[in-house]
Image 1 (cartoon, protein in one colour):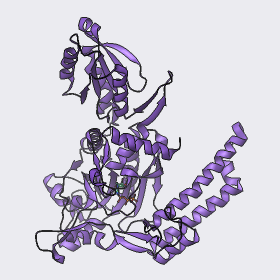
Image 2 (cartoon, rainbow, N blue to C red):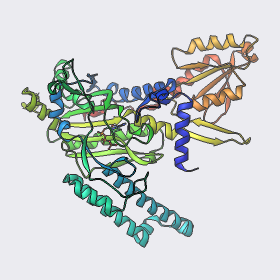
Image 3 (cartoon, rainbow, N blue to C red):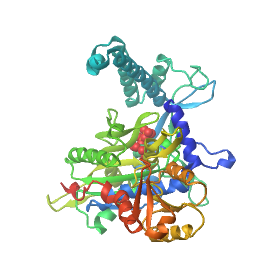
Image 4 (cartoon, rainbow, N blue to C red):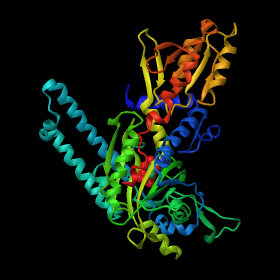
Length: 518
Ligand code: ATP
């Protein structure tokens, strides 16, 4: 099966089992907007919890806030979003489809990189054991030619984006002979800039002064509360403020499921540091954040850093943590050294000092900021796509299992009476009552036990507890494990400890408390 087919199956599965529904589906949907269903909301909450605990609970110099989505419009002038939060767009005249010029070029580069990967795989097959990949990449003429081509396009694109040269971007698309995936033609318009912020009106008067924006990032809510938190929380630099919340962007390339949405959630942390110490902290947070991702056990090879060459107007260093999604490595989290840009601009635009008095150096200064910004929905997709598995079983059957890390699984255990009579449902309910405040449990008595196991596999439930006639006599149950499908006989009294040992944060989160004091 190709990864494209697998991805399609995953999307269908996410809908069938109540993880993600297209928004407004009975009205034919709304582009790039999705709803989370009964399973999705549990998984999403567990991811939030995992992040919040790692950032806020395990660091005594990081605190959280929850700021409003609507903010004073001047904030978005100060942050640069009104003037510069743009995407370069290009339309195909035949299909009338609109694309991001940089994404068209990146996809073209990815295709060239695919060719390189195929060539390497061919070499591996040909030379077998003796294959030396590094040497092959350094000497094979096809690989070298394609690598040079990809690097040249990348360099030209970066230069055009940095110089805001829209004509050069269009020329590069023409030179690369990129065709519209829908019409197949190369009949392109000029490239134009398009602002991604949604706007609306405050109050009843619709004039220019009443225009406000839906926030395109949660970060600014943290910056404008910097002094509120610092003073009321008596915070000493270095310290951080974390926030989880909705952000809105009028994204043009509305594809790839929940990877790129118009309404999404971010989990952001702004870490305030002494000027001159920002690169040390930037490196520190790059490592810490990668460690957090890896702690989920989805596979360390699925992550990589992408260091930015083209820096945003506010940054002096930036990297993405990319994840290997079904459609390739793409950004999952951004780590940015934002200098004193944001606080400096708010100081200028509001006329209020945004300074910190450092008792250690006896100086006042505008702090520098390291930002870690991760998409909640993209993390959801990363977990789901790493977990989704279509598995052939020994007996000729097939099962779909979600190997979601137990700490994040929407349902931790299912309680299943073997039959619907002889007092088994009552016994099952009794067990359920003792566990439901500790774990999210499900009770299921319909269909054969095999079918019920499959249903739990499909939503990623790590434990199934089966109650049979023997249970009534010896208070023992069958515990069936999702990943191995193995079964154990265990006393009811031992269930809480068994499950807790697998799903508790203690087992999962690296004990990183206090380390950000350095
Ligand atoms: P991209 O280059 O993919 O558009 P970005 O660099 O604009 O992303 P940031 O502004 O750094 O993204 O936002 C931080 C994080 O928010 C991203 O790493 C991503 O996980 C998430 N994010 C950004 N835009 C979207 C979106 N449209 N849908 C879902 N998540 C998003």
